[in-house]
Length: 354
Image: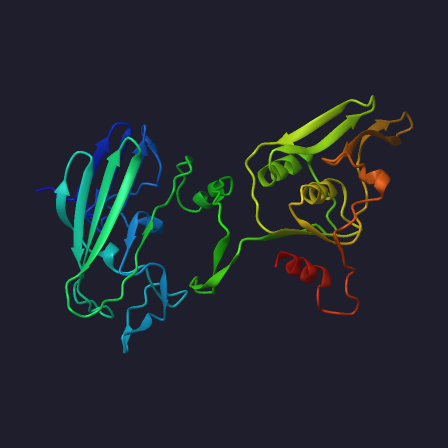
């Protein structure tokens, strides 16, 4: 008799252009495809599940430091399974085979009743339903306390989004660097060295452009287009006076921002700060910038020397010539603190975000 996979039975569901596979082990989502393309990173049904792909995290997600917690006047000790952080990680549900409750063409339901586990003696039953329709996948989870005593409970899921590169191992990290997930939010969670939540703080950003010589205009366009609303980003003027206007689309990021500049902030770095200032999108802190708003053409001479001729000038969204103006003037002028370990300009930028 053939052995079933080590992750247990594989429950296949589909609806239209969508398909998914859920494993008996942990009720983990092993595959999710749309038009045959992976939306999450799949895994081998006979191998250790990598990176917690598709796990159901219960009766707690994330970590419990030293595996210790107190509940309702009692202290509990769970096994340590993340040794580098000395933590208990992601609960127990992913370790057990779940019972099949219902399997239809487009949905599957499984359940798991917690045994009397070291550090978690509570009696709960979790039910997970994965359902596909024309809109995609819906996951529904319920929990029932089978006992008369209170039970601590928390929950999470751990999808691992595919980036289309089909890489494995360390190559996944390199491929992910080219991907961007944008979340529109007002606050974010702060964590400690164990990756445990410590509180919330407003989403904000400080761009430190001190001693920044600038860079490629293409990179400037990309960053400003991501941050700013629809409108002009900067203006390029050639030697004949012809203007070329570069604009952004309507997608933007509106959070508290500050930009730190000084006398060694040059070129594209200045125009980045100027655009955010003119859109009233950030507070500019520090000292006047250099005022370099020209690009040069190099002409080689017969004797081996060369001359550099300014061939194009650049203007801010409001048509300000930073070269003629003598650089960008900050909103908050702050000189570096002499003979002090305190970064006065950084402190002023932080204060501007409050």
